[in-house]
Image (tube, rainbow, N blue to C red):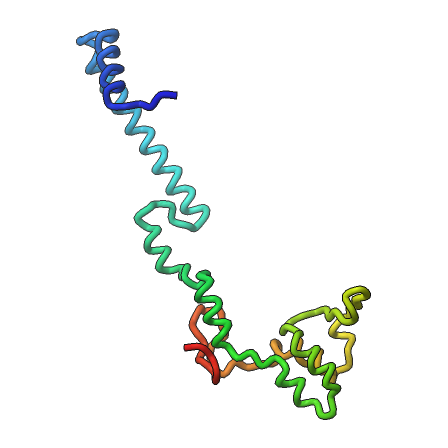
Length: 173
C-alpha cells in the first residue's frame, strides 16, 4: 500500500484538470465545495443529536470542561492506596469488645474484611464455608464483618467524593 503524498495529490489534480477541461473545472470545483460543506453540516447535526440523546459532550473543546467535572485522579492507584492507608482500619475493634472471646476466633476475625459474607475455615485440604450471618451475634468474626455497616467515619466524609481522610495514628504522611 502506498501513502498519499503531496506530489501524488498534485498529479491527480493535473490529470483531473486535463480530463475535465478548463471550461468545466470551476463547475466541478464548486460542486466539490458544496459536497464538502453538506458533509460537514451532516456530521455536525449528527454530533449535536448524539450529544442531546447521550447527554455527553462529543465536541473536543468541551472535553476539557468535562474532565474537570470528572475527577479522573481518583482512579490513580497511588491515590487509592494513599486513601486506603489513611483510613482507619480497626476492623476487630468491635470484636475485641467481646469479653472472654476465644483468641483463635479473634485471630480469624482479623482476616475478615468488612462486608464479607462468607467465612472459610478449616484446613486447605478440607475448607469449610460458613455464612457469616449464621454465626452467633457475639461472634468476633461476625462483628468484624458487620463493622462496615455500623462504623462512623471520624473525618466527617463518606468517602464517595474522593477527598482524603484524616491521617490516623501511625498512618503514612
